[in-house]
Length: 292
Length: 314
Image 1 (cartoon, rainbow over the protein chains, first blue to last red):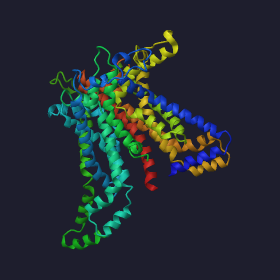
Image 2 (cartoon, chains in turn red, green; image 1 turned 45 degrees about the vertical axis):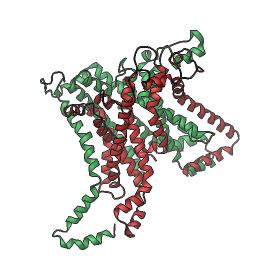
Image 3 (cartoon, chains in turn brown, yellow; image 1 turned 60 degrees about the horizontal axis):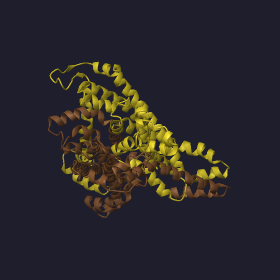
Image 4 (tube, chains in turn cyan, green; image 1 turned 90 degrees about the horizontal axis):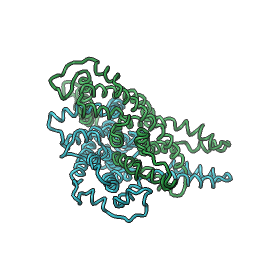
């Protein structure tokens, strides 16, 4: 609401002055140009992925070359290379299972930090946040040694546990900020009417919190899907994830631009989908709930 | 909640000690929190303790029996080894450049997007897109599709504009750090833009309106109202951006493999233990990264908590 008010106010203020409309139009064009510049590499990637390797590697670039699915065929291993499916399935497993685990731990924790807060709940909240600010790379070696000694090396469950820990602070912060939007008065009213805790949770809290839970899940999914360092160090042939597969996909022989573009796009597709689905809550998640 | 306490009070005299139900209730309130808290401490805090211990050991994984206490020797070596010292400097340079340039571009884009124009939603989507590419994919895109000296898009465009005599630089060998920075700036500008856009939209419209009534120009409104209001959002962008970029591994690993003077601390730590098997050294470098991050985090927590308190008191 406030947004709409701001823009209409500025638009009206501008209209009142001579030449304002012309300038507003010019700035609109500048915004479009900036958007195009930013999206150009991505569009070029899409176009290249549909070109043949020979057409992808010309200089100057051949924009109007005939389109083909060869790059995608080669990525999916239909022409004899390694199949990406095991890596894609590993990534899916690690991301989906860790996201579910994260929510399982984060939602009750956020409940105890918002709706029915423990004493010193802000301190607990900031403890979660401070763990996110320590670089995980500093714990890489002990985690590697632990995985090696317990047989968790090249095991997708090691990544599931790490990704859960990696995303838990973000999820707790996001869920805390979503759950604190649930009005306490409604919960108390339900309790006065004799509703028991499970009923209050499913009938009152859940409907208000569900969009927030969905956004949190999407953001956790994106971070897990993108992760490279731990996947690279802790997995090998069996548990390799999609980003690791992507780094090993390029061979030094022959042309590979079209298939690299195809591979990068297919592997980014789940993130692009999740990101656009969570677009409105993206900032809130990335800024750990500090910006709404 | 008020209804449940009399019921409990009535039950209390049956038990010998009165405070017990209270204590039980406190634990019932705490219970939902504990699994997350314990999981977090075990998985993320214990490794740091282990890293701290290992950083005081002289321990090469290739000679596992030859492990002994080394005091601060690893720290001495990390801080005196030119390659490791360089990677500390590279980390700072990379982080500062990427954060400041993305912040400035993000501010300009947020200001552009904060006005009403045809297709605003489409432009917003176009600007967010780079951020939603898997980081490895983005790095590969810049390395091979854009920067390649023979058939990359940049040289292709130079060729198309300048004809056969056009310059065809080998971007990555000639300016390796700038190449890594460019790809990161492309991905992180949308992040800064989103935070600053949220900041712009939380300005008080009446204040701006009043300033305009008093005859303030766009520039005066920007300098005296918008910038002071944005200050904390700018701080937040700088700090969160720094936290994410300091830890960057993907771009350095993919674009230059840490070569040509682009190895930052995360990459160096990875290499020191994964390829050189120097566990003690890698851990000492890790502890140095943690100390650096703690300094950053102290500031970051302060900014977040001031935004947070404002939100709670609202």
